[in-house]
Structure formats: structure tokens, C-alpha cells
Length: 304
Image (cartoon, rainbow, N blue to C red; front, top):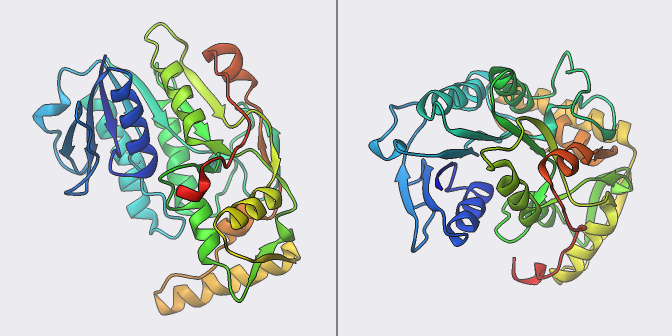
């Protein structure tokens, strides 16, 4: 297939573009960075989704739309322009193509735990940041189309620059302070499992709709973090603070940052993602897409 991958200069988009090119597909990766994805059998094209589509965006069979502004402190207009407007531009550019949209589990209600949440849960009335709000708006744009919408949670693996590495950066004096001590269940998503889901979703005869994507079974977040710290040879212990205390500290940090026009060191969005259960039912992906994920693993994490 001739496949376009947007956001190919990022972790998820780049990993997916590489895997699809390795599969033998003709892949064109699009990104905003001058020096983005590279593959001996692939093609990388600079494209800011605010601008007109380049010539390379034509003659495509399928698109995997990964480009997004994944910043929980982004101004609302910037997030909407990138995540809603960008999706609209990609949808118009690749009209008639198999459309796989990379959404996020963040579209679920962040004000309460997600306990084996299913895709048909009512949409929340409010969001904690512009990121989930804009991603939910992009999903509404695609409603009623033939798009396949994937909702992974906490994607990790080789090349990850966000999830686990940020936790490493938060270690201070051998201590990692986390809400509830991260003693909560989470559905993590290895990048190879997400790649398998995308392969399934690209089937032109496959179903459309919304699908949660995650590893085979939920895990306790604290156990995964502890193993990752050990593999990174970083001696540290997790210090638990009550969720309510972390929430109030984040609220204060956000208010102070807003007054000073800076970034807060802690946000309520981050607290909500770390301090309560975030598990997601993947039965629909298994049943309809033929998704067969493996369990959470940090094998090889020493080289990440």
C-alpha cells in the first residue's frame, strides 16, 4: 500500500512509519521538523498542517494521522488549530483513503477514575486541558466517517521521549514523589502493540469506529516505574503523597504559572493521569480488528 504517516518526526509517528516501511509498504512520512523520519525505503516531506498539502500527499491509499500538539499546557487556540484544524486538513487532503486516526484515552473523563472504560462511555462535559478537549473535538469531526479511531493510553517503548523519561527527570535526591504512590492500575501501550493495532486498522475491508488500544492486561503503575528505575540504574524510591494534596498543589502551580505567563511544574492533568486508575477495555479491538496484544514489558529498556 501507499501509506502516508503524519507526525512522522515524533515518537509514535516515526515508529509506525518505520514499521510499515519495514513491512514493504511505500511510506511517505510528513512532519514539521526539517530533519525528521528517515528510512532507506521511505520518503520524508516537511508539511506544517496549517499550510497547503505538498504534491507528495497525492496518490495515497491510506493515511495514519499521528500529528498532534500533545501539550497539556498549550493555549486552547493553538491546540484546536493543531489537533482539530490539522485533522480537518488531513481528512480533506486524503479524501477517499483509508483513514486511521491516532486519538488518545485522554478524551475520557479525567475527573474520575477510568475503570476498564469502554468506547461508548458518555463524553465528559469538561476537560482538564486543551489537549484532551481538542482531541475530543477531532473525534467528533470524524464521527460518521469511515475512519478508524484508535485510543491508546500511555504509549511507551524504544524512542519514547515523554512518558517514562519524564519520570526519570522527576527523581530528586533518590526520591520520586507521585500521587497515591502510583499504586493504581493502568493500561499501558507498548509501541509494538500500537503498531499491530495500526496494521489491523489499515485493512481496507476492515471495520470503522473507535477502539481502545493497550497492552494485554492492566498493570500496577508503581511496579512498572520501579522496574524502569532499576533498569535505568537510577536508585530511587517512590514517595506517596495523597491524591488530594497533589491535586491542590497542581491547582496552585497552574494559577501561579498563569499569572506569571510560565509553565507550571505540575498540572492537574498530570496528577489525574498518575494518581487514579486508568484502565481500558480492549475487547472491541480484539473482536473487530483482530488485535492480539502482548503483556506489558520493559524488555530492552536499558537501551531506550
